[in-house]
Image 1: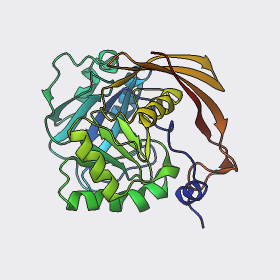
Image 2: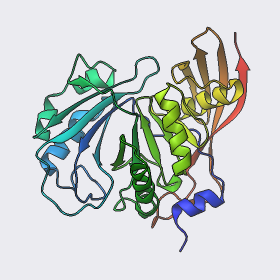
Image 3: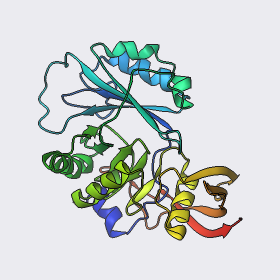
Image 4: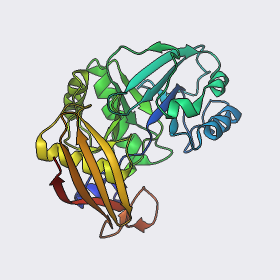
Length: 301
């Protein structure tokens, strides 16, 4: 039986403009098994998980669970959980971290401020390697487990100290999928060699555009537009480009991408449907997921 990832790969479905839109991420360490809806289907207290979902709703904060790669027996909760909160906007990217014994304390966070990129001195600054989050939640989609877990294990065996498994970053059909912080670029059809290049670049403040799905700070048309400008100019500095404006509505969007040096471009993006139909996730009916096609990049200055 064909998987959703196999179908997407064989149909050469474009990756640009397919990342989740979430400027800020709250990551909670939770070892052990995960259910399809991990915040309420893991060893995390489901009442706390539901409350976190409600607290984050409408704030531009996405909450996910993480765990270290390896075997995940049905074990007791850890005495202390590693927590990260990260913001991904260009020029204002940061990661803060702490260890908590009770995740219910996270409900005291100012989610609106975090979503807007203001940490207010929360916890400690994270100074380690870029975080490499590999989606491995097989209860949500089998491709994530079959393809993601071996990748996470290989990266860890190679000495990756910032590698974590994550519950869900969207795009099962692009498995194995990767999300890199602090800059917030997502990748699909990742390989160990490719991820190592991505992480080496991120350490130096740069972005690799091969197999890149987009930056989560932007909506999907803007993700595709920013990557198109990078392809045109060869710009790799993660903070060099920002999205100044997005106008229009589906299926046509005009995105203004600005460079830190004063240049700017108007990018025309058309939203279409991927054909022929394919499963967006294993076990689901065939569908035609949205795709973002860049039809013009016009220099403005």
